[in-house]
Length: 409
Image (cartoon, rainbow, N blue to C red; front, side, top):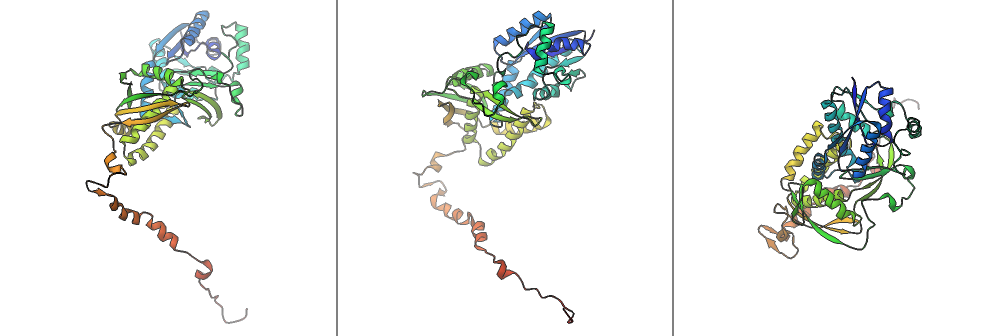
């Protein structure tokens, strides 16, 4: 008997994949795998109900802890892509690994997803799966299916899907972010109403301050109360979201080169990234901060590609881990006007001395204000020297005599 594991959500794409894997690809049995990375309970109910209606063996894997740990790794790397925190991108390799494990435990010879050929997720899933010996199958992409065809096929087969869209927009939710795309949002000039948002309220005039504690770059407590990674993210999503924190409306460049309109909500991610960067500003030297921006950018790009286990990422994390040894302390965040703004930071590892930096002190130790005079004289010296040298092409151009043989012109 041949068996294939399918990344299963219970939506239109994955539902129509079940009969297609049997009819078009000749598999005797399909098993569905749903991986929990923080989706709403309603999504698991939908997947379970659809699986029951299809008489599909259905596995649910809890990977919230693994995903939350990766999200916190992304905080240490200040990971964003084109202005928004990575969410879906980081979740996909976690989901893919969990599905692969189930597939191997059930002696599957194939593994499948319902992604189209235009998005990023196909690449992120398959980057994990192609390390195995399983046949990788993408029915929607390989058969060139459109949503209209899928809806007609589902109706013809009497598959348990309602219209197939799950609403006006395509929504992907996990612990770290909620993305909304499709329908009218595909028009870059379209101004969406607030109904596209679920995690964030409209910003008001109210404010609140919280204190976030970090240990070696990892957030561990809020207002002195310790949380595990999942609980801390869930708590901040609710709190920061109530102040309208973490909305992004962007034109995103996908890996295949397509430009797409994406809307995101990421209250906890925005808050933690802002706080972490503020603490780094206190404890890291100027050179460390400047160089780490390059490291963070590379980490973010590999994270966006779903290649968080690439050798380069391991090397980058070696540098990140070294810098994070001193990123321990607290940051006070103020929620106001839809923003999470750092308004205070404290660490025993601060590369800062108020006594030396203050305008109110004349001399501290071996440093005095007049010591800067020599530096000021040398600063910009080459610029002044270069700007003082002027050239006049008409004056400086040498005269050139033409050689003649003394004869006629």
